[in-house]
Image (cartoon, rainbow, N blue to C red; front, side, top):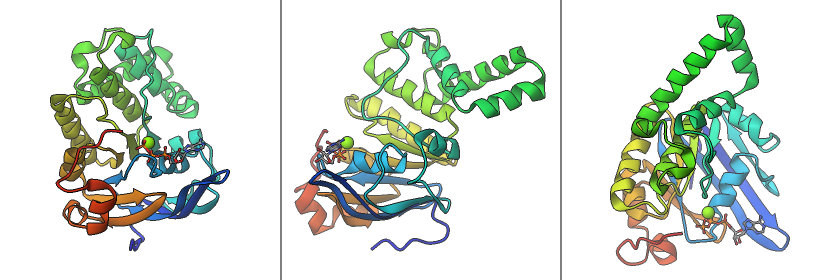
Length: 264
Ligand SMILES: Nc1ncnc2c1ncn2[C@@H]1O[C@H](COP(=O)(O)OP(=O)(O)OP(=O)(O)O)[C@@H](O)[C@H]1O
Ligand SMILES: [Mg+2]
């Protein structure tokens, strides 16, 4: 079904995940081309978050491999994978409650890698200059996320939708080549969801490849370049939004008649 080409950024190949007797992912193969928004959809328990956990090194698969730029991620730790540029957000958001919004992003920039930070400090011969650079970089990321006006607010006091935006700004601080978003629109109102969609497009247009898990079908169908459908730990379809919407098996397993909007 999915023929990978040498230009694919990520290749998930025959991945299986078992938890004791439970098969969370039976046999999953799909690939992600650079510069695209690819969505992973399917019913609750289909294995979407498990797939993210495998790709980002939080889980070792029982079988199969995950190649990012040709390198196998399944033997690497989450920090090593993040350092390669594969960065995720979590289904449940966590932000540093006591910091301000700006400080949270500066902290995320610091976490990007001590070697890089040390190198930068040595090159500039000044910790102060490096701190200033990180501050302006953080301001730029808040601008992209549409959170500049909240820069000095304590992160823990942000409204839910703003916290999701902050989590995204912090993920961008890690300089992703590929960004994995697990249900970013869950719990957002329609206008926040709309803003989030534009933001994801903007991130893609800046050259970041996006792998998205989302139950909001309006969002999935309007922003995805390609969709992969999982059901019971198995990939049942892959294709363009139009192909997926018209696929009888996908309709039966997940979409139902007339694109229901199932929330996870
Ligand atoms: N750590 C774990 N231990 C045991 N079973 C697990 C674990 N993580 C996930 N599972 C099981 O694996 C299956 C896939 O779960 P997963 O969280 O990947 O689904 P999902 O597609 O992300 O669902 P949702 O849309 O509800 O977020 C489910 O049956 C789940 O109960
Ligand atoms: Mg999930």
